[in-house]
Figure 1 (tube, rainbow, N blue to C red):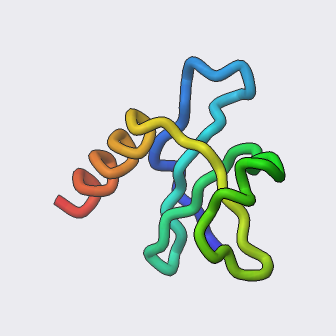
Figure 2 (cartoon, rainbow, N blue to C red):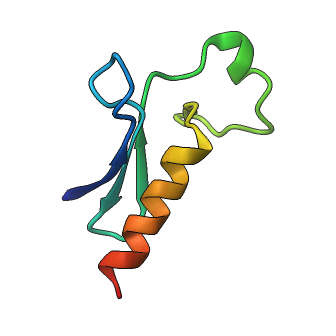
Length: 72
């Protein structure tokens, strides 16, 4: 899979995580530490093998803005 970095948290002490990528399939990929078990248990119907991460709205919006600009 090929990944293009769209946005990352430049204020993070974890070297830019969370980050949002665009894959060569057209899907977004989000990188960050997964939820702990207590928070993961609050998800509605997660499928086997799924995980979830936290990401700020600012990083999501920055990724969407860069995605829109690349296709313009």
